Image (cartoon, rainbow, N blue to C red; front, side, top):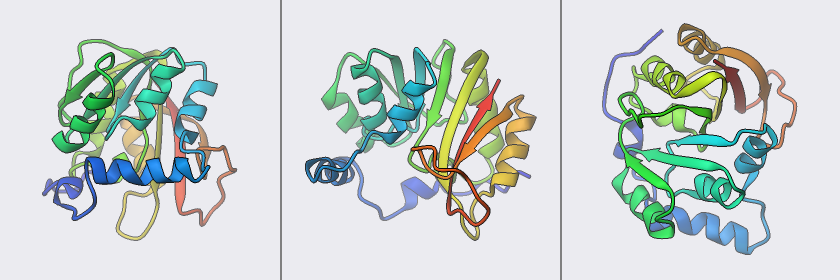
Length: 194
């Protein structure tokens, strides 16, 4: 169910990037909001090594590293990675397209937080999932959360592409805090096993 390749929706968006993007989460944290729901979920799954695919400014990778996880971050956007690199030189940050990256190792988990799957280049969704699957150890988990809506990748299509990449659905929630998923939810967090 791959679509035609086109421009990358993240790089073509007129959304805040780099420091401006990061400032939003800093404000939320300063207001007392929990900005580590993704890291909480990943940590609860007992994963020791994690590839943060579409890591952006490094919020999830940095928190996982702080908690003792072995983390590598990958992102296509140089401005986002520039912020991540400025926060930690202890984490390996890789600028690359998720459809093509090869970090040279496997992980117990791959996390794609922050709507990564709806920001990959249209038509590469299956390639991205297959490539992320190649970065998983046998039995490893792929955890991805993204918004569901008209004209976007559906969960049915996502599951079909994941199955084609050798990934089996083991759990789905409506939020990173494990809110039960129900029809009509506008967000899904899916866990697939290799």
